[in-house]
Structures are given as C-alpha cells and as structure tokens.
Image (cartoon, rainbow, N blue to C red; front, side, top):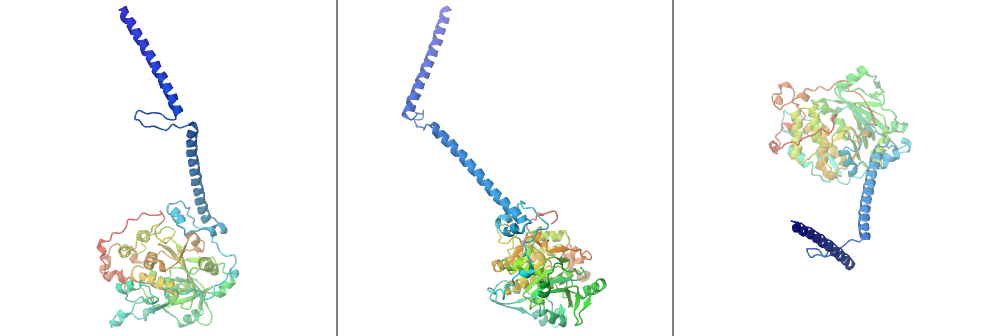
Length: 509
C-alpha cells in the first residue's frame, strides 16, 4: 500500500513538471514567432498580429467615423428644422425664403412633422402704391386661339329640346377637349338661350373692368360683406362685382341697403350687383359655379380676376394679392391648398360623410376618374396636392387658364357640382401643360374673415344614399339640366373599378 501511494505522488510530480516544461516551450515559441513577425496556426494559415499602434489606429478610426456620422446627422436635422421653422415663421423675411413647393417640405408635411397653423403672416409687399403692374399680357405659348361653342347641337336637332347652359356635351367631345392644340373650340357654358343672362347695363359696365374682384350669392345663402384695408389705388383700379340670382337680390333688399347710382346700377357698399336672370341649373350649388369658374366668360375684358366666396370678407388689398401670388413668381394662376386633404378620394369620402352631395353620384364620379387613370395623391406627383381650397382663385385670363377653367366647368356641368373633386382631375389630364401655384392654407386663412351662411344648406339631393332613389324622378331629386354624365351611358366598364380605401387624414377632415 505504501509503495502504491509513493508511485502516485511521483506520477503527479512528473505531470506537473511536464506541464511547466510545455508552458515554457510555448512561451519561448511565442517570443520567437513574435520576433519573426508571424504565428503559425493549427490550420497552417499565417494570421497577422496587430501591433499596439495598429490597434489604437483602428479603434480611433472607428470612433472618428462614428463622430462624423453623428455630426452629419445633426447638421441634416438642424437644416430640416430650420426649413420647417422658416416655413412657419411669422417673420416676413424668413417665411419669404421658405420653399413650400419643395419635395422635402411636402414629405415632412405628409409625415406630420410640420405643425399645422390656422393663420400665418403673408409675405406681402409693404405698400400697394409701390407695386409695379406688369405691362402687357403673358404670351399665349401653348393655346394661342381659344373660342367657344355657343349653340347646343343636341337641342337644335330636337324641336322640343331646350338648350342647356353647358350644352349636351358627349363623352367623345369631352375626350377631344383634352387633346391640346394651338387652336381650340370647346364647350364653356353660356349656350344661346341656355340661361344666366346679364342685364345690358351691367354688360356695358363690365366692359371697362380690367382688374376684377368677384364674388357670388345664390339661393339667398349669404349676405354681402364689405372688404377692408382696400387702398385708394385699388378702389380706382378694381371693379368689385357681386354676382347673384333674383332670389338673392330680393333677400338682400330686405336686409341690406342697396344704393342706385342713377344709371340703373345697384350697389351695396363697394360691390356692384350683377344679376343673372334665368338660373341655368336646378341646384343652387351648381349655379354658383358659373361666376366662380367662368369669370372670364362673364367679364371677357378682364385681364386679372380674384374670386372669393360669398361667405368671405376680404381683409387684404387685392393689388397686394396679385403681386404676391402672381407677379412676384411670374405666375398666372394661384389657388389655396386644402387644409386636410391631398387626394380627391379623401375629399370624396368627406363629401359623402358630411352629406354635401348624393353619395352614389360622388362614388360614380370617382370611379370614372379612377378608370381614366387618376390615382390617389402621392409624393411622386408633381403637385403639392390634388385638392384645392376653392374659396379663392387668383388668375390672369390667359388662353391656357381660360381653357383650364372651361374644362373644369365642363366636369362640374357633366358630373357633380363639387368642384374640388374635378380640379385635380383636369390638372392630371392636362399634365404639365397647365401651370399653377398652390399656396399654403394658413395664408389662405389670413386673407379673409369667415362668416356663417344664412342657413344650413338643405338640398334634398344631399341626402340620397342609393341610385334607386333617382329612378323615379317624381321625387324631384334628379337634376334636369346638370349632371348629364350620370344618366348617359359611360363608354367604359365601371363595374370592375374598385375605389381605393381612404384613411381620414384628420379628425376634422
């Protein structure tokens, strides 16, 4: 037993000595290999050995890359935030250098990074008297000769047919109007014996109006509101024209003092009243689109016009508006951006939800537009939005702008009177040929004081839920002189068209 224990002790001591020898040899080999500059690995490869300076250089380079990356990201973030701040600044200098048309701003706005403002300061010129009015007219480069169809062919071919104000435009004729040429003849309302006649005295008066501020009241829906902050120069330069129907004239006489100028002209403050006899449509909303969109037809001698809805009180000098929105950027057409919607499909959904027109007819119009290639608005489009805030339109009456207005009105005549749906569609069909400036909604809200209508609009057609309600026209829901496109067979197959899903952009939208 004793011998066995001695053998185990000797064996253990021998193993410890062997391990020490192996570690010593390994240390010597390592030193030798380091002196030679390399190590042999079990796989036979020769891995590189990092020197202390090399290790330090590598770690320092990585730190440098990280620091530079962080600084670069901070600089980009600071530039973006400065861009947002200048666009929302109340200081005229900074708001003037902001480019709200840029893709960067539109993308940030779409992502919700831009704080919405109800009102913002407009970068106006300091003094209307200092504004230089351009000489001459903007050249007509694309459409040089524009004329209008004045006789309703369908009515002429039928002895008992009554001419329509907008004409019996066919789908084929409509399609032809989007083929732009230097010389064009199109439907543009005001068919012979179609309604909306102006008194001869008023026709003579407007012949001298080169600069026009126009508004309209139909169906006694509003009361006149006097503009404020109008300079003496603008009072002499502009004709302030209020277009209305006979029903509204009777209402105004009961509630507002009307002045007779001794020559047959009727005035309410600064506004000259222009009465349109024989309203062309059953629907008052559609009647109101005549002076709004076809301003150039009502006042053919006008070179510039500013349209404002009847519920608005203008609080900015009109000469400053022309300078800011047209002349400063060498533009000819300006309209405000809608506060909530960019896509016409969003706007159509809001119209149905708020019961602003028959739901099935709004859907039918959207199906037609989708079938004809109109897509929901996206960042890839060249426009800031497809939906305007149509209560103000600032334009020079060039041939191209007049053509756009005619085509826009033809959609209102053919389909629904909701002009915000058809504006973006006509822009889409004209592609890049029609140029316009869509300015921020917060500036739009700074141009007016908004007043309430005299009542809530209550046209029965606004409550229609199904097309079957139009089948029997004894109810009077179906318009007899407008919306022809809904009751004339459409040449395409709309049964396969599925409207895109809509997500509400805002709880208020």
